[in-house]
Amino acid sequence: MLSRKFVKSGEFFRSFSSVAAVRWSEDKIRDSLRSTLAERPSADPVWVFAYGSLIWNPLMRFEERRRASLVGYRRSFCLSTVLGRGDAKTPGRMLSLEPGGTTEGVGYRLNNECLAEELELLWVREMITGAYVPKWVQLTLDAEESVWALTFVANPSHAFYAADANPVTVGQLAAVAGGGLGSNAAYVLDLQDALLACGIVDPYVNDVADAMGAASRLRAAHVAEGK
Image 1 (spheres, rainbow, N blue to C red):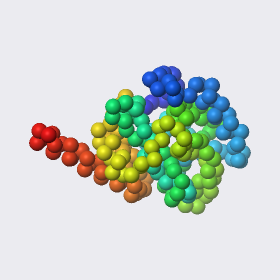
Image 2: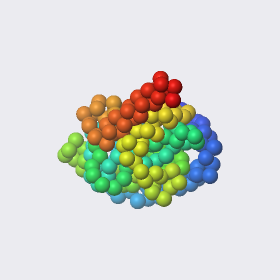
Image 3: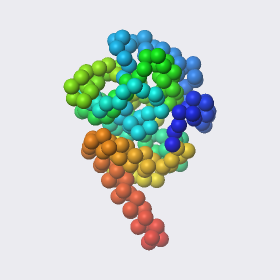
């Protein structure tokens, strides 16, 4: 599992040397963080909206964690991965946000005293290839309180962007993909479990998990038949 030490030590950054053509430099990552903070819409505490692995493995130190919803975006496995959860021969799919719908997830309130350190950690983790676009969004906490929050949405112009995020397509890829951080299937199931632990049901994620299971069973049957 991805750890805070792995990211802060620089090992995570160096692990992307095989995709140096798309890996952002450390300066570019820091510039992205600075420009995003320059657009900070409020002096209120900074919240981060988690909709994927940040739910069960945030790495960041935070002051408060609450259920949250974001209107205008939906989960989408639209980012191809050839490293953490896939490789060049069997690329996997990672999660992002695309326009449309509503996403239920988790909001983290960061401590302003260590804000720079925690956001630097987050930026290296999420912006290592620029496959996401950081955005300030209006987040609703516990269905009652509105706050400004940072989140990361898909960059459709990126080389890793995959327009076909249909559950069947994603499920077939995730069933066989794996990389340095583990199998793509484990990522999908960890996401499903993390959402359920928060009382969240996402039909799209469930459909991907079902399609992944069907693909795995079919592959096992073919192996048993010697095909």
